[in-house]
Length: 320
Image 1 (cartoon, rainbow, N blue to C red):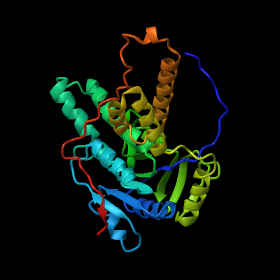
Image 2 (cartoon, rainbow, N blue to C red):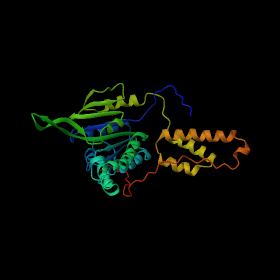
Image 3 (cartoon, rainbow, N blue to C red):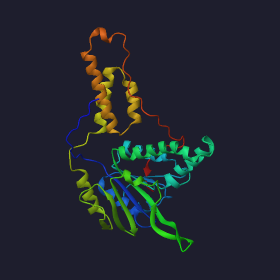
């Protein structure tokens, strides 16, 4: 295999934003404010017992209110549904429930360890990691803006002082897997109500340690300018149409359409599949007739299996 480097170019992108903070510090209001300024259509995945709809008189958005169990695949389906329905932005509030909530990933790993691995929770994290990766992929590959809200709590550590064990405060901790926020391009935390501190940023005009008081339309405009600066990114729908056309010429349309459905929104995957299909067609064109005899048709790439819970069929409804 020949490895080739190409000149890097900045491409237009969609927002991947994480908002962290305690309850009541402004995550929901900020998410709605930013989402409303990023585009016209906003989908809101609410696990907080209808808290988002308390702002329905201030913002126009559609909502799905999820109750337990909070299997991460339900968030995956909701994000996918929002993209397929043509929304500009989807907000997931709160991603913490899909980690620590009833039926969340911690509960799933505990159950798998007890029933499948005879109490060995360490081995169960292999299963849990696959579930978590599906959620990460859904966030990163979505063709629309994604804003994820996460709760924080006070963190404590045990220290030895004078031969005695004492408990000391150690700042705040996000209620999600450690380093989960690394998956986002931008991470902001509310340590003070309505004051957003930027912890991580790939936006050169909004560096880490920036403090934004009452983040609103100005912040959204800054983010949009950064996201829309660059070469247009390929649309998944256009790439999908090209791949289906190539697959039809290869006699592998049905399998390819099925694979596309399982990689919805993943432009990297469909681009690689297009390259592979072009190479197959080129090989057929240059192959001698005798060489082609008796050779089986090339098989389309088989995607990984995705199975969501039977009860995980969210739909987006108008906000009450």
